[in-house]
View 1 (cartoon, rainbow, N blue to C red):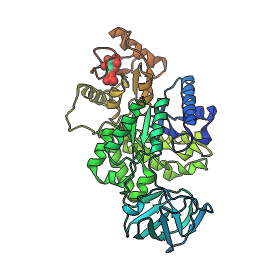
View 2 (view 1 turned 180 degrees about the vertical axis):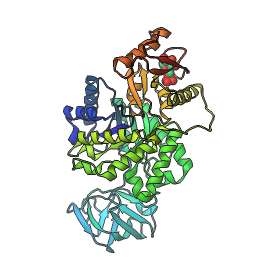
View 3 (view 1 turned 90 degrees about the vertical axis):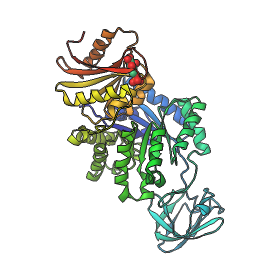
View 4 (view 1 turned 120 degrees about the vertical axis):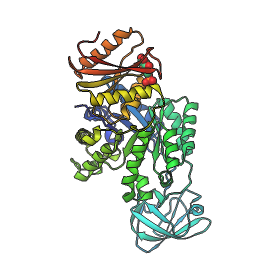
Length: 481
Ligand code: G6P
């Protein structure tokens, strides 16, 4: 059975070899994430080459997502590498303190504006919220706090402000350099960390273009202020091609109890606005060391799938974990299980809106027909940019959508879309009738359909014209001529 939900797997030391990349693809990975927070530009270039080489060898299309580090705010380093913070103790974060010489009463940070951006009564969450500090006073260089929840704290752990609001610009100097690397690689998706607004995404797009790149942009939703204001969230979604529910920092800032509702809203809204959505962070966390996931993890992945996410993501599980391929395989099993549920297949989406364009109308008519006409086994979407396939895949359905395109970039890009399977096919040299016949034959040769099945084809009047989809045709396999 075709897995509809896409799996984004982060590569790292545990998955550097050709064999392990291959095993991840075979287990069900559709997109590889290169984390620009680690490694040099050369490493990323080599990894990307390796991925493309292996995908070609396996005759499949895999997208590459480059994830920019962004302005993660961190404590500096401790003289001893780590400290223990006791409850109620005083602890100072000082922008002028020696960055290598932290101790259990004071530590540096490179985020120089911190004392100006916080006030007494605010809470700082360190190390993904494991440590909590209440601010009791600030001065020009220091934030003086009382430990609310103590514990171990080691070098370079993250700092979040509960409720959000720290104003660091989304693109750091390092990110700007990494954008040049991303353009060089010709990655398929570029993920921007901590965007505050649509402008941050637009700036990343502009820099990428200037560097000669043309990838789709992913906004990582991880600041409280971007989910507290629905207009801001909408504008970020619309400025992007895809968004990521980046649950790590977002959960720390808004609290995990709120996160589940926010996840559902982001997924729903993103699909409504015709963008693609990835759900990320700690989805199969226990499998970093364990051979099987917990039931709670299985339910978390399944829940995101029932919410409608296009993709689920693995981070440390595949980058540094003990069982990368097993984890992807376990996740793929959950995907297929959840996709079988009625909720995952039925849609009331767009029942009461007007369509904006002809291709959207054709896509909606196609999905309605596919979901209701007996005997339909597949949809073939002839697509130049992936746009028709995107329209189709915004509707919940159990129907496979085969995106047939002559563009390799498009085939890689649609690897992230839920329910969409990329197939290389060039209609431009073919006559109109040959296109239908050969497209159906392509599916038949892969055993995706059999004689007697109905297939719906979407296409336009001219072959190879972007945005030109204006027809749906229903054909019976074995009788197409
Ligand atoms: C292919 C087909 C055209 C169709 C186009 C849609 O090129 O041959 O008939 O109009 O795809 O492309 P789009 O990028 O808008 O999905």
